[in-house]
Image 1 (tube, helix red, strand yellow):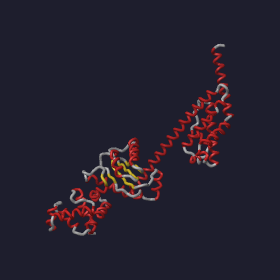
Image 2: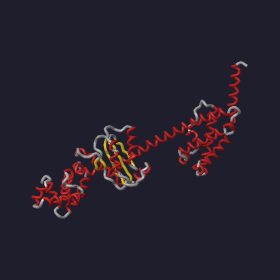
Image 3: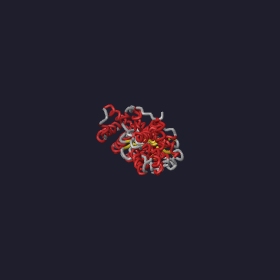
Image 4: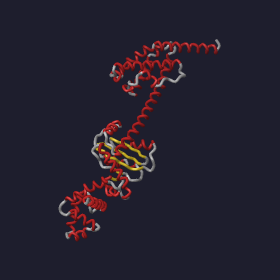
Length: 397
């Protein structure tokens, strides 16, 4: 027989075998569906826990997957059905009961069932072709499932970023309604431990890559985090049971060369707006103290914040410095006033008060004990001098 005739006969036999295999696979679709459901029940605990109605819908999905394979096997030039198409027969409520991971498990088992029964269903001589078709189909379905995962992650990431921006903006504005707790819960905020706000600037607005790096670094630093990127300003809300100031300090390289301010530590997220307000006020006032450490606590900038009109800083100085000194006995307030008025000279203050310099030194140590600020330190004596000024103004009203 001539070679051309042999090839024609071989091609006709192959076509006949494929057609026979296709017919047998179509006729055996019920067998495949039953086998797939048995595998689901044996291997997947989540399937066994589904309500009866959802289990029946999963059966339709499994049958849809097998039907999709048969349709593709009849014409491999057509693109295989995507995972979303296979689930099209099910109600939308089913997607709330079955996660994407469950979907992938379901598709995998259906493909394995078809592969296992390939020898039984294929026409004699067509077993290899059917197994290869199953492998090609499973590869395409796997790529489709991966695409579903990627799209879902991208959508979820974009949604989380928008929700996170809304929460940070609400904290900055001082909104403290009931929705704040539910929103941060949706972002995975555990609520354990204290919370503080860290603010600073960058040399230029962050692109997507640098923003993603910032979020990863922040999540490594603290148990609970919220990241707000507002142009060239970065607002970080840190929460947890560890040392939050140390966590905030570790994030310093993520900011630009300007000042970085750490707000006061608060007991819960409901008090975070106070920390944010102090940190932002400190950011506005930081240029008045060029020698400030980096990062710097917002409460270390109280005098500069007073100069910018920060009423909370004014109240803090009165509460923590002026009031304790005013209520103290032993001429402590008078001694501090004289010491500051004489250019921070112990001897000059002693002469004005008609006491020994050691008495002035003793009373100044008492000032440090009462307020936490040491008058003998140049920076802290400036804080006390501003505290006396705002305290006297408050008392004169």
